[in-house]
Amino acid sequence: MILKKSKFFLLFLSIFFVFSAFQIDRLSACDDSLLRLLTAENPEDEFNKCIIDFNQKLGALGTALKNNDSSQYEPMLQALMTSWLAFSNRYMVNPPSKAINDPQWKEKMQESAKMIGQIRKMIAENNFQQAHEEALLMNSYLGRFFENFGITSEKKSFLICSQLFNEIESARIKENSSEMLEKIASLSEIMKTLFKDSGNSSETHYQNTLRSLDEIKNSISSNPADNLWKTPKLLENAREKFQLFRTFIIANKWFPGISSETSPEKK
Image 1: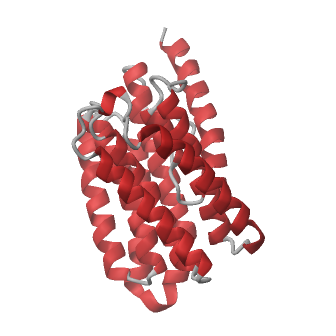
Image 2 (image 1 turned 180 degrees about the vertical axis):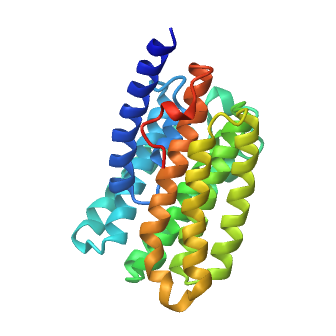
């Protein structure tokens, strides 16, 4: 029975690794996998499909901005605007049923519209670094639409962690090493709670993520001016480790008793 569970678990992780690697490369710092987690119970729901589509367009633009792919700015921005128009026309006044009693729904929609306007403005002014930062902030903000969906405290913690990763990236862009260290400390504390709540079953992936965050801290603490340029790869590695940690917590609920040693990654 345990062997059967292990095989299913490894299959689950293998699928996730392929999906996550693709998303991290294509969407840069925009955590598309988290929105898919939040919408997993009903992926065919119209609201879920709309917000996933919008976030994918946002991620594609963010990647173009990060890679200085100027030929893609305009078409990606137009695709983003088209997706937002479809989303806002449908849900600005009439929120989905799960958010019908959300008193801040209209405010969230209006704030999202302002963020898109700011991204558009920064691109028009050739301020592409700021436009990329605004895209990161908007990716984090999208999770707020799920606040009144009755999501678990665990998923709320996942949302906050995703936001903190984007805030660490934002601080890196601004070359603010002290803010990076502050956000890493906050992220570590939330991870500690997630680890304890998981019954300490995800220790391998928890420790791997902490080590990857320590690499960032050690790099920028030793010489911030010289080492900030090294952090994008380190931050991407930490995000991958965290997503694996998050995946194991979720998978362990499906397959109780599976040790983290079952996972293909042990270092």
